[in-house]
Length: 261
Image (tube, rainbow, N blue to C red):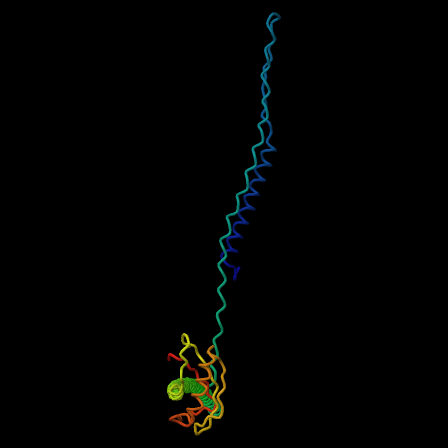
């Protein structure tokens, strides 16, 4: 029939062959069963009395039925060819853009570029501002460190100047006290019976002109005669020597005296 594939034709032929073989098999089987048996001729003899009867030949056994032949197996069907994949439908080409679409695209592209430029500008400004902030912070730290170093140097210089001034003042004051003590010692008459080198301490009150107002014994030397001799010498030394600088003047003086110094 028109429109049949090769596989269908092979299957139809095999079916016809199988049916023909089955019909032949049935015809052969029926003929074999209806075949008439062959006649058997037997001769009879009168046996003698003494002789034993002759054995009769055995009856022929019927032939066993022949096994029916197995019908031939149909050949395996050939593999069906794989169906062809469907062909993709041809893509329709898009129509060319219109002038309005082109203008819109150009406008969108310009806006995109402008937005990108604005973002880049803002990012650059942010980075520059951060750099400026970091630089200002660094400069402020440098200025602060320099100011601290300058203050430290200034304080050190002031301490050194103060130390120098204090040392000079201490030397001038010591020299001032030594001049007073020297003038007083020049008026002391040391008693001959004094032993050792005892120390007598006096608190002296004076005027800016060096005039002595009072002289009181703070610590005795243990020798009353020596103490009284020193006190008379202090009053006799008035007016006391004046300091080289007015700021060295001391209204209240503490003077120490020893006979052997």
